[in-house]
Image (cartoon, rainbow, N blue to C red; front, side, top):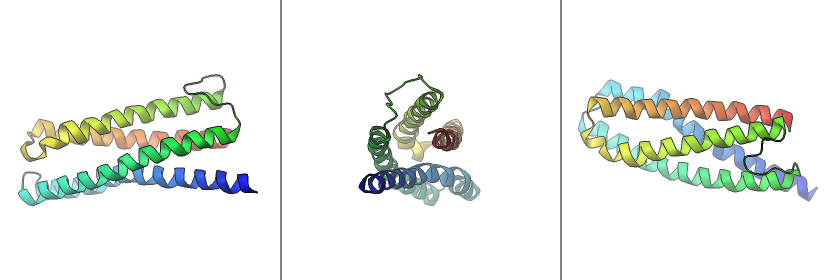
Length: 157
């Protein structure tokens, strides 16, 4: 019974922090950014909102990635499937490995958007504004891909 409770807790935390990370991207991409764009991205209040929101969301994203890494590691260890990092030995392992590769791409894109582009919000050119939005939308799409990969791997595991 103790094993079920521990595994359930790890799985629940993994789901909550996935929802927080991916949900934050989806909310930003499909709600906040269009609303801010409608107000005019060059105005000072919009820039302040974007910078404040981005810095707050970045904290949740970093915490989420760390918790996801820890809970994923513990879940793999607990499951007894013999999972090793980037293993393509079985369809299940291949799915999990592909998910991890997509997550790695997401982290790299998030770092680029947040730390390279995000630092220039005050002086965005129209091209940089489009790049920022495109990276956000690509990352949101990849987040959906990760959710589907997770669903299919849960069905297989």
